[in-house]
Amino acid sequence: MSRTTAKRTAVAVSAVVLLLPLSACGGDAEAGSGSTVTVTVGYQSRTINTVTAGTLLRSLGYFEKHLNARHDGITYKVDWQDYATGAPITAQMTAGKIDIGSMGDFPLLINAARGKQLNSPTRLVSVTGYNLRGGLNTIVTAPGSKLASLKDLKGEKVSTSVGSAADGTLVRALQRAGIDPNSDIEKLNQQPSVGASALTAGSADALSQFVAWPGLLAYQGKAKALYDGARLNLPTFHGVTAREDFAKERPAVLDAFLKAQAEATDYLNDHPVDAAEKVAKATGLPAEVVYLYNGAHGIATFDPAIKPQLVSALKKDVSILKSAKLTGDVDVDSFVDDQYVKKALGPTAYAKHLATKPAPAASEAWPKSASKTTTFTSPSLLLRYVAGHRDAVRAAYVPDTTTGTLWFADKAVWVADGDKLLPFVAPETARAYIAGHSGARVVSYADALEQAS
Image (cartoon, rainbow, N blue to C red; front, side, top):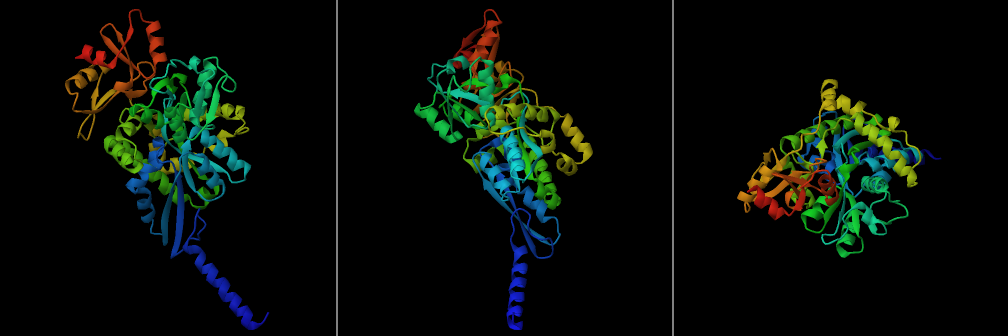
């Protein structure tokens, strides 16, 4: 090689080296003055129990604020990538193209399995929204459907997303009802939006899905609840996963994310109505539906701590995925890594988070043009309020008498038991109550309002 050629080669190589730090994804940029690091976050805007690590967090700008406050000579950019489910987030993470992602418990296990299989391990680093009884998943049917119980699903077409928490609820619920989920129903593996359309069009007899689809369809009058997932009494949750190499190479960035997530969680808990409005604006979902899940007494509880109950539930979920041949064994203990969120919150605060419990079930009315809801100590008192303010109530919510799952008051199944008016999410749960209470009977919502007023 001539001296001139060698010189040109050296200059070209130097130019490439100088350009490399200017733009990077997945934490590949070298730290140093003038560097730019792009952090890629995969989230599901309409899976609204991940909002503290996605939709709400993005709208509040807390993550960017923490990154910009570092003053370490690096310019940080955040690339928010929105997906409908957790599967594509996992695919992008294992390809090294997404650094941090949020998804439900069953997709988290697939995330762990794929990461290990492809030698690109991931770690569960925090929790977003959870329900200790499983109320985040619901099986619904068309409004005019004659299906009244899980046993009625035998031989019917049921839409779900295979590998999702909603599919796990379907499988477990059918098994408890004595129905083989593999041979006794025709399972349609569909994206949530496709399944919702199939139910509306009549090409699916029932739909098992995760938040916010069941509540959305019920609110729109396009579905009614058949089965409340909380009857399983098994925790279900959504969480945040990060690539192991990213967490080790960029611990300060992950720390900033988790601190921002904690602040977004505090914002949601302190301003539930405003948070619901922000999420609604970003997603196009009705704020009333967002509040059903994320409100002060909503179906979900938001806390970034990785609680032992959730880890225990995750271990039980492995068998469902194995039976569907979606994963082999998953080492949950090695996948769960709470060191990052514990550091972000501080050990004392983290211990307090571990000890916190979900808010007690309560009935709520959301008056029109109001910035907060009104809470009632009983469903009957809520009904009395609604009866006296029919044109002034934006939404009314009541907890299922048996499971505590919040539901729209006008979509609930109401039971009159003497002077008591009791709401239930699904007819089967109401019938189970009636069977044990002589004289109790189902009444219409209109009759319940009349009796309460």
